[in-house]
Structures are given as structure tokens and as C-alpha cells.
Amino acid sequence: MNIILFGPPGAGKGTQAQRLVAERGMVQLSTGDMLRAAVEAGTEMGKRAKEKMAAGALVSDDIVIGIIRDRVQEPDCATHGFVLDGFPRNAAQAQALDDMFAELGLTLHAVIEMVVDDEVLADRVSGRFSCANCGHGYHDEFKQPKVDGVCDVCGATEFKRRADDNRDTVAKRLKEYHETTEPILDVYRKTGVLRQVDGMASIDEVARQIGEVLAA
Ligand code: ADP
Ligand code: ADP
Ligand code: ZN
Image (cartoon, rainbow, N blue to C red):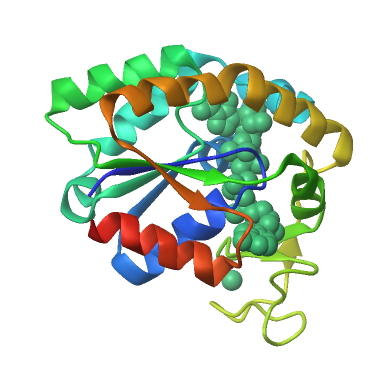
């Protein structure tokens, strides 16, 4: 199964994608994670993306479409199915994805919108951190490691925070979401693939609702 997890910054897309990886062996395709890796590695792509990301603006379509196009053709995506997390984010990317699925003979099973009130997003994002070794996501208040300072998944003791997870940048990313990203939901509503889950519920409850969508 191939799905899109859709929602504003802090909605819980990455958290739920990591669960789908752990529980169903699906492949998480996070353009944000891939771009951050490129920035860290100092590649040409990373250099082109860096400033936009720091400003909370969208990186150019050719970069993100290119990385998704390459990645969906890797064999693991065909075997296990994939979860798009953070892509597409505007009409041009949605169109490119549609063309890509047609060309590669892939099926989009569902677009799952995580419905969340804007008011909670700043707190979600400002408390976000992740394991520096395996990338598993946590939150200062809502998802602490079981043992303080130790990653549940890999046992590492170093964690990191994203440079763009500050209140100023979050406000810009949220504005970008409402203006540019959210309107593409109309396309998916029309094609009948759109499903909604309650992103305000607990992480376990959201996972349960996503499970229901996948089972339907
Ligand atoms: P996104 O990928 O959509 O930006 P994340 O999955 O990174 O969002 O979640 C943002 C932050 O909120 C993380 O710190 C995560 O642990 C926390 N979080 C995710 N889902 C929930 C939830 N349902 N309730 C409370 N906190 C959550
Ligand atoms: P969040 O989960 O908090 O929404 P992401 O990790 O998905 O954040 O994205 C972080 C940043 O990476 C975005 O603000 C943007 O600069 C860039 N980015 C990620 N995905 C895309 C995309 N599909 N198109 C353009 N820019 C993107
Ligand atoms: Zn870890």
C-alpha cells in the first residue's frame, strides 16, 4: 500500500510514519528528513535547500520531485509500500506525483489528513526532539523516552532538535501550509482517496484510526 500522510507542521506525520515503518515494514519517504540529511552532508542539493528551510519556506519543486522520483523506484518501496510524509506540498508537486504514479504504474491507496487545531502546533513543534543516532521522534511533554535521556529504540543517549523548530519559523510554515499545501486536498477529495483522522487524539489513538483506514 502507498499512502500520503497529510497535515500541518507538528500534526504528527513523522510520528505515525515511524510507527508504520516499525509495525508494517512500510518505507517512510520524508522529504524533510532527506533534505536535512543533504544539508548536513553539505551536498549541492543541501546547499540549495538550506536557506529556504531555515526561513520556513518551501524548497524548489525540482529538488523535492527529483528526490521522490528516485526514491520510489528503489525496490523496497515496491515490496513494502511507502508513506509519503511532507510531500506533496503544492499543486505542482501533486501533479508531478500523479504523473509519476501513472508512469511507474503505482497506486495511491489513501491520502490521510491529520486534522489538528492550529493552536496546538506551536507547542508540538517547540517540544520536538529526536534521537541523534536513529532519528526516532520524541516530545518534551507528550512523548518522553521511557528512560530519561535514553532512546527507546536504539539506546543512544544523544538527541537533537531542528533549527527550524522555533515559534517564528513555525508561524511561517503554518501560513505556507494553509495557503499553498492545504488547497491540494481538494484534488484528493474529488478523486475519492481522502480520509481523515483526529490528529488531536493521543498518538496511540491516531495510530488506531490510521490502521482502520488501511484495513478498509
Ligand atoms: P510532523 O511530522 O507532522 O511535523 P511530528 O510527528 O514530528 O509532526 O510531531 C510533532 C511533535 O508532536 C513531536 O514531538 C511528536 O512527538 C509530538 N506528537 C505527535 N503526535 C502527537 C499526538 N497525537 N499528541 C501529542 N503529541 C504528538
Ligand atoms: P514538518 O514535518 O514540521 O512540516 P518537514 O520536515 O516536512 O517539516 O519540512 C521541513 C522543511 O523542509 C520545510 O519547511 C521546507 O523548507 C522543506 N520541505 C520539506 N518537504 C518539502 C516539499 N515537499 N516541498 C518543498 N519544501 C519541502
Ligand atoms: Zn535512537
